[in-house]
Length: 229
Ligand code: ATP
Image 1 (tube, rainbow, N blue to C red):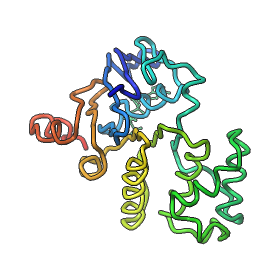
Image 2: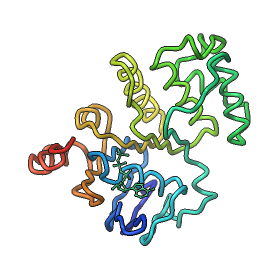
Image 3: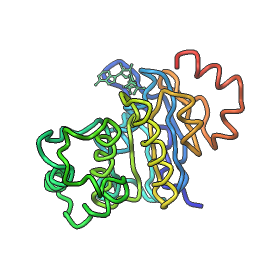
Image 4: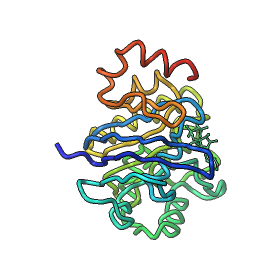
């Protein structure tokens, strides 16, 4: 099957600091693709390049077999950090504002709320939501343009155990519905539980990538990556 995304020799310097060093991997369609690595390993930089908010210093990548252009990349839904929702407005109203800001139509709001199991609580104020519900609303916001690819940066960061379980379940459900999900994580057990594929990063270099059940059985790689996790 054609990969959704192919990265070829991506290198990124911030001035003299090298954040990514010749990274190449393929993201298969329908996968939950984890980018696993400790702080500073280059995960956020990698996601920024995929989402067209950062330019690589060198290297190229393809989106569905074609050179990635900004237009094609509009088909990516993103969750970088929990958006600044209005606490005194309902979940539904917050999504309407998010749709306006992102230039997406409002017609996808009911489906997005349904996908994240917030239909029943759509008229409740955001301030009454649990941490998991707040993050699910953020994912609903990422779903507004009905994108085929979702990019999440550490989607369970800062959540309580119930919220973490909810978000992990939701990610698996979205993948089951055909979305491809690329997510950064610094938690080995999260990648084991949620992801089908993984790229292991350390200090800007790719240590290994492929299906989780092939890569995470390699004790050397797990140990090297786990040292700082
Ligand atoms: P974290 O989980 O802490 O965000 P990360 O794995 O996402 O870490 P990056 O944030 O991509 O890693 O950082 C990779 C390297 O690039 C680090 O050494 C970091 O200090 C550096 N870096 C990141 N952003 C910038 C920037 N805007 N200017 C200079 N250096 C940067």
